[in-house]
Length: 435
Image 1 (cartoon, helix red, strand yellow):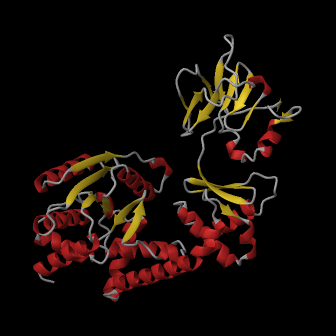
Image 2: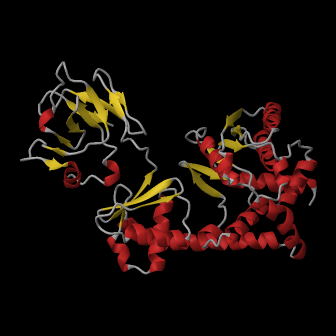
């Protein structure tokens, strides 16, 4: 393809994908793909879109000894093209393995912090990347959702992620870069076929394309068909799922018992996707069904999936983050100013309106804890009850029973904030609030 044709193809493809969006954050590694993407966007700004606002972000993983040099190259290139530039450093746990997945997650987490309202993120994945993603999903035994590979548009932390080069071949990107005399950096790890994606790129896909010249395009077509099937399935099941999910995002269990395994697995996957959790395998779904959903009524089952935990309580499934163990935490508090609680629980303060507790006496020290043991006599009840029974009476899920702030005066429990007040704390002077 001639120089002008390749340039126009790539720029017109990006222009079409951009639509009306004019504030763009570009994921810029300095490699050939993201360099071509950024160059094409800069050219569009100069020639067709003067109102286009570009910013480039470089994620410094700290893995390669050349990372500082790459960051400097990107900074200098952006200065040359007059594009605002951001460097964000991330840390990976190399000893935990799966560096590719860690790096990807770290990149998107860091990038999400720089996406402002009205800004979209552009990344430089292309058609050959799409082919690799499909084959990796095939290797894992994925279904239509996994085989859908990468959509040209998706959501990241509530913002739009755009992949405008997904229909462009790597060969075309290389041709563009060569003809436009663009400088880029080479990541030496791209030549290491220890990594699955590199193995496919270096060893497998070239042979497949040599045997069948349009193999990559056909794979991408299959991925698009899988996307369509997945969209159709979601459309057909959307109303059913809406009836199963409550206002807090929890999933009712009882109706699932009336569905076939195929239908309930599809609904479970859709529910997990709503919670932004990576798709579980068929085996994981079977374990969730047997050990969580069908567990005994008096048990406290849980299943860890990626960065979330799946819990069951009173005929509902809950999708929750991982929680810190707060049972040993004790925070002294003088009540004069709000108290910040651990593990993103919010802030604790007092109000003198609608009081339900007494103020502490001069000889009483106030502390905030997250564990209570024994029996307690609460206001409005006759006699004492075990703390476990009280939590049950107030319908407090098991995982919340060590996350609700408990106010102690010396060693006496005064109140479980927002739940009950004990006879030791009975009064109408103050009310404890956390939010």
